[in-house]
Image (tube, rainbow, N blue to C red):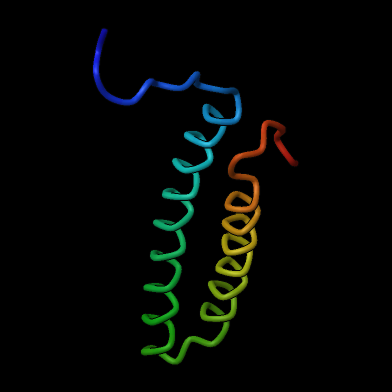
Length: 78
């Protein structure tokens, strides 16, 4: 008999969480890029571009919250 923890069965929700966590990582990278663009636009005084990137940040932030809230759920909420 083997010692150590007994592995639990991988569920559909676990598989979805792996995909959601990967997507969260990509979303975080995208947000970091937008923040960098916001800083560059602010340095240039480019208000139009700054506002555009702030809107993009709002979108990826809402997406990140939706993905985080869905962790552990077996259903895809879209």
